[in-house]
Image (cartoon, rainbow, N blue to C red; front, side):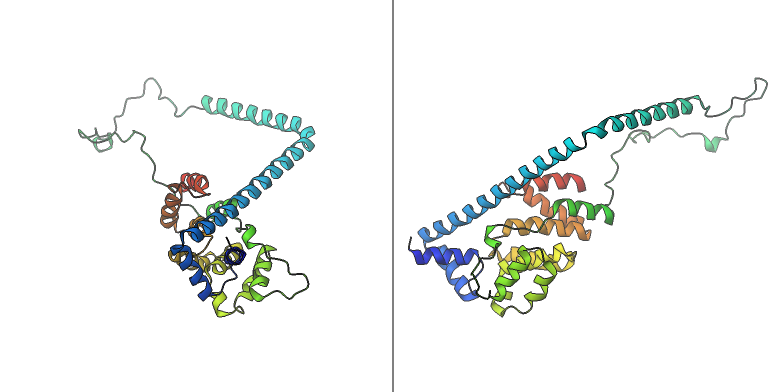
Length: 288
């Protein structure tokens, strides 16, 4: 493949192509089989790098957890003593409850008084389920605090190598590059403030719109992120389709739109190519 084509592909995945040039790129990728294969290979390579970096981070976190556990080991004996004390208190309370009579018996010479007929228990009609039979309780609606906890446990702003701003020495970065730099460094409020000053072509770029939606989610503005994520998923032009689909489900959850969240999670769970397939299945069990 020519060096010019390779540079074109890299600029596309960095979100640097203007709208017209991006459309030309995507037309060629759709009509030129060899070029389209190179584009898909580049996309998979970026995804593989992102997954590898995620695995390295998880291993580092696991190692840090083991180190912290080792540092706290002297306190384990007190934890066991406290647990044993709580267990003894629970057994004593159970025994006291078992010794408390439910009702006092009548004296032997007291006449027996039957309850009036209208208070006698009725026999269930044939075919009617017994009221004492355990029934599956209806699902309990998640309150706001529970939804916030689930969202916080599952959301982190999406970052992969294609989003990392390229360094140009002392040259002044373009506004789109500054926008991505703020996002990459976790300065989400500054990134949002800068977005409105981007050129019109950049403001309609689905890759940059995805980053804007991520900034909204990171700053607690899920209501603003939802319509943008829905639109770019309908357009199917962003390279962040999988991340957008996962974070749209989380945004629905945070807003209390549980039916929409369940439908989106079902879609992810059934998609074998989604990197968030297992997380979607686990979250679906929590809110179903």
